[in-house]
Image (cartoon, rainbow, N blue to C red; front, side, top):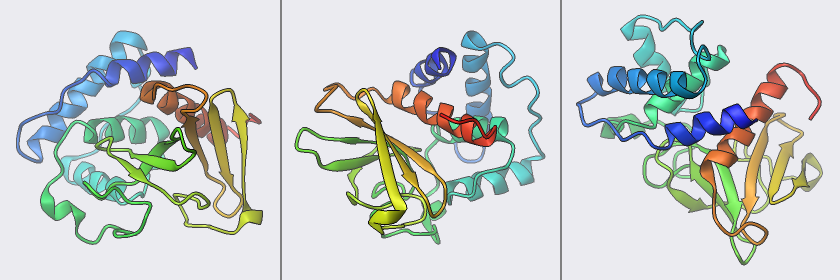
Length: 203
C-alpha cells in the first residue's frame, strides 16, 4: 500500500502535456514511466506498449470504460491519459454520457469519491479530477441501484462500496472523519483493491 501511495503522490505532481493529440499521449506515457521509475523501479519494466494504432484504440476504449486486461498496461495508459487534454470529438458516443456517473466536464468515468460534511456523495473523474454529485445508492460502474445488491464497509475514514451485480469495488473518503480530501491515498487504496481482486485475495 505504501508503494502504491508513493507512486500516486508522485504522479499527482506531473503537469499536463500541451502538445496536440496524439503526440501528447506519447510524451505523457514517457512522463508516467519516468515518474513511476523514480519511486517504484521496475514496476512497469515488463510492460510493452503496442503499435501506435492499437495504442490509440486502447486509449479510446479506456475513455469509454473498457479497461485492457493487462493491469500494468491499463494503469500506465490511464495515468498518461490523465495528463492530456482529450480531443473534443472524444466525448461523442461515450457509453453512459449524460447520466449521473459521467464527468460533466470531460465525459470520463469516476475512479474514487467522497462524502462531504453533510454526507452527500460525490465522485471524482478518473481523468480530469472534476468532482460531481453522485447518486447516493448506485454502483458507478453498472448502475445497479437495488439496495440488496449493494453493500459497503468502513476502514477508518474510507468507505469501500461493493456491487454484487458486477463485482466491482469503489472507494470513497468520508470528509466528516478526515476533512482534507487526499486523492493519492484514495487512488492507491482503490488500486490495492483492484490488484487484490485480480489475484483473488480476500481483503
